Image (tube, rainbow over all chains, first blue to last red; front, top):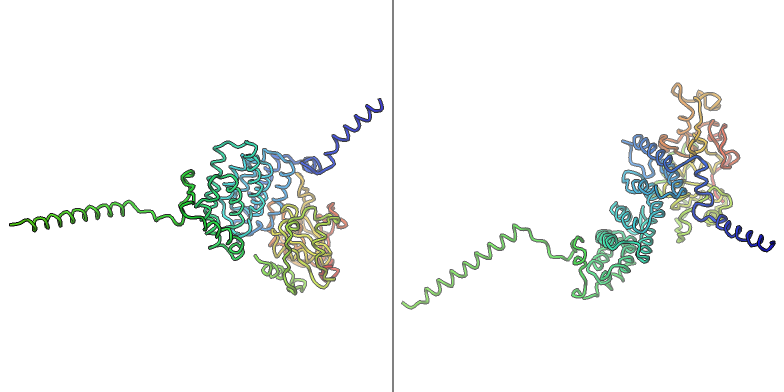
Length: 296
Length: 209
């Protein structure tokens, strides 16, 4: 009996063990927020209400990086949303992540929390949206420097577990390739490059990859140029005939810098007309010559 | 904005006390990503923050400023300890001026008891002689001005709560104490009372150890 009671006590202790560590929302997170009377709906309502008022107050003032000192308050509300850990917050967090007229600090915080709550599939849809927003930094990740790696890691894990549909992976890959063709941020380029090298067949020796690193080392800052010059040189060493053009698989990718300039239809028509005129002129010349050579 | 610009902005506020911050040493860049973000910054036992602020000891002859990425996940702009002042990316010149005045011995004042509570419990009542004992009559206050509207004008205002006016307008250093929510005994529990947010509460020159 004593032994049985001891075993039960040990089991209870084992079950209580996770509560001693700050994993998930068990230790002081979710309960702390709930104890203060908050619910997710209430937090979202307060946030939106105050945001509206702050936007109205700040209208017409010089733009402020931290929303006139209000950013910490809004980050505090977002921190509570994070502690609640409720996935129902995802649409709200996405909206705040994409709000370009908000302080970048708030955008970053909302996006970080979104990435922490989202699945790999959701990250594959979310990441291209935030990558489409401008980034002021050239070598560090800027406002999304803690978001991109988390999203990529979740997508990576999702692919490994076959949780993402083929369509989602293809759509994400196309979006990431498009982003990689346009970014001048070496840190973000490296993140995208690592992911594509692992998951996109043909990318390591692609024309798109050569173009990406050529652009980074020619237009980037001194740090980027020094750091990525060896990578760019090794890619330039791939013979052009062996470089793969990923546009065969992803037709919507942007043109490459060394593409032949596109001809306008007017020019093509003009060239064809000139060609026809030249052929007619040559035929007339040959005819005249034959006429002249005819013995009289 | 760069660090020099932030310090110049801080000086525009600190002139009220005749203080000017001048950079006297080189910038030191610490290549340690572990020190970029800090949480639990008000906990005196926070070893990570203490270790960073202890990287230099000026023996009180200089104000040490440590520029980091985030404090409390973006919810705090700056924090002051005797070892130095940490300023987050979200902070600015106003944050530096505010923290430097903490170094001089001033305390924070808040308009609400609990900014993280669903019922924040704001300070009530109009501005009166009891609420600003050393400054009553020392300035013009519109009739019926609420104490809650006066506090956001003060440099030692602790936060911008909700849609209150911008922090950039919070520059006043009054002569004496001001009634509002304050952290009793330097703790985190707020009580209503006369907060030492003015010239009379200044105890020393700013400096880090």
